[in-house]
Image (cartoon, one colour):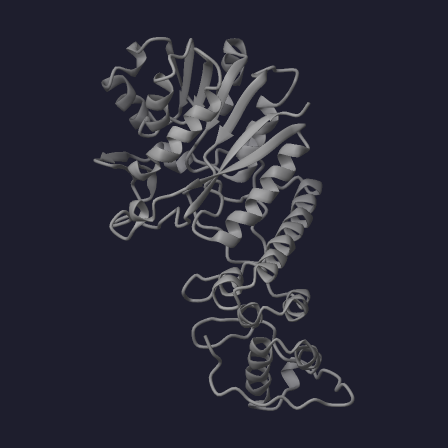
Length: 390
């Protein structure tokens, strides 16, 4: 990676006051932008500071969409990255190839310290946005699975016009048709609802929550039935499945899931089945994997199952969820994992992420053929294992 025609920076003894952007001479803005990109690539924090004060636009970029943050990350210089981030450039900005600054820190600078700085900055930023959203009763809209890719904007959580109590986040999905096509389940927009490559991951999830003989288990979201098939191998004494999509429910009935030993199907949104879930609990293991919902909904579910008054998860129970948070970007994924763990900690929950290696051949280009957007591109899957804190 290199800058085009890098210039030699001129260091000045005194700082020049920044002129208003609308008063910059023709060509001066482009010159300052070019110098800022080059100084960022050089990791020259002193010059970057001067250029920003002189009016250089921190939101500038080259022809491939690489921003000053991408170039600074490529240099590995944390002070330069800090100056650019403090100037207002989003930590999760993408170039035209959908690469983050974290990708440049690891692949070009080969600097784990620079990468970790970005993760920590993103994490702290999201906590601030979460606090603001909580104080204004706005719901977090971080995608929790394969519904949408992380937002390449200043916020990964944007305010919703409706609160979760009076809106159905996945209503469009539930009212649209979905199709089982061999090794995949897709919606009407060709989004992958569930795919066969997830099978090894689901095997690990099933083992994690089936930690005792003949466990009582609860699964939210049937999809292709991958994890439910795995759970059946542990001879559960009670196997409750909550599924909201009518096409999936029909698929379950057509495949005689309602006749399997100790299986009980609750047809409806989990939000509408809470009392039935409470009555059937407590459960030794719980798994959550819905489609079309957001982080606010996942957090709502966590608050429900970890409410001591409901007693849904047994005191020695294990909970897990499909961790598709930011699954097409390592930086996004690492930040979102920290955010989720923070929220679970505040619910008196201990969370450990077990690293699971994903076979990259199973998520190659052929896997995603005719799929609107890949929802997982990482070699390591962080499997959450959640238990009550002692």
